[in-house]
Amino acid sequence: MHRLWLIFAQTVTVAVAILFVLTTLKPEWLPGRPAPVTVREVTPAAGDDERPSGAASYREAARAALPAVVHIYTTQEVRRKRHPLLDDPVFRHFFGERPDNAPQPAAGLGSGVLVSSDGYILTNFHVIEAARDIQVSLNDGHTYKAKIIGSDPESDLAVLQIKADKLPAVTFGQMDNLRVGDVVLAIGNPFGVGQTVTMGIVSALGRSHLGINTFENFIQTDAAINPGNSGGALVDVNGHLVGINTAIYSRTGGSLGIGFAIPVSSAKHIMEQIIQFGAVTRGWIGVEAQEITPELAESFGLPDNDGALIAGVVRGSPADQAGIRPGDILLSVEGKAVKDPQGMLDLIAGLRPEERASFRLRRENKPLDLQVKVGKRPALRSEQE
Image 1 (cartoon, rainbow, N blue to C red):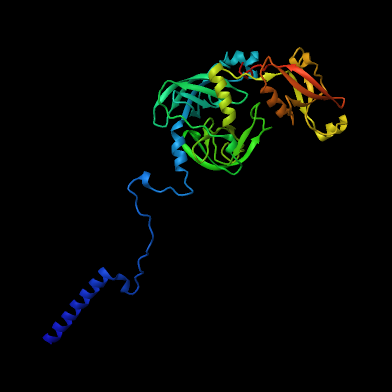
Image 2: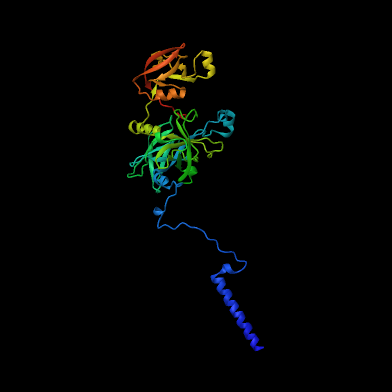
């Protein structure tokens, strides 16, 4: 009996030892235990700079452009509209005089783009409109007080400057190289959450007739643009600036995939005028134009609906002095065809004041060529003036 007990004890000891070895070294041999999953992993790189960038990554574009995009914080004075009851003597008798239109402080935020190392910043006019104090925060956390160099409400652009040196300026891209379908990145400070990069494509070029600005030639993109992105950068896959984010089409206030940016070519031209002269100078002749619809063309007996119908002429204006009359159809300016009233506005705005320009018109179905001495376009008055 004692011998049998020794054999049993030795057998159990050997079995436990075998089970321990299998559990430790070959667990897959044991029944009911799934084999470990073998996965493929990327070999860890020594540092981030040595990590290979995939074809779908835009990290280098973001890295190049991010330091040049700034956050803009403004303090504004907003005047409330006078309520009609405040003019009622009975109401005033019971409730007394009310400070109906006293300035009310309001905070605003937006974005901007450093365009030079000595502190010039390009942004939207509506970001700094009516601002009494403007603070600019850089990507590295430094904050500076900014002053307004000049603005252009009709294109919704403004130029600021901060006192700092050796700032990370953006590199300007070329609009001639931009095509529908190109990948673009929108960089800004949406809703004040901090610097954000979104990605999309160029959905369309030359968007106009949107009623956003007087002069419109927008890049349309589906890169997410939200409140706070205004004035920020739209860059290409190389991190080069191609537009200034300006507006969105939205039913909710958030991005619906239809955003608009001012092309860098227009922004650069306007910025240079503001920095050099403090304002933008455009040509003006003093006419009001109307689009020629097929119905109008038929009623006037016109061969086509090309050009812009002159609906009104300002008395004493350059157009009036040159002999342009209501009912004339403007066909071209300096040899460039006029397609519609917006095209006419752009062509005339590009003329230099005090110079003479050739205008081709159609009057009573007969061509007419006139020389017009171009005037200076009056500044757009603010609604608060």
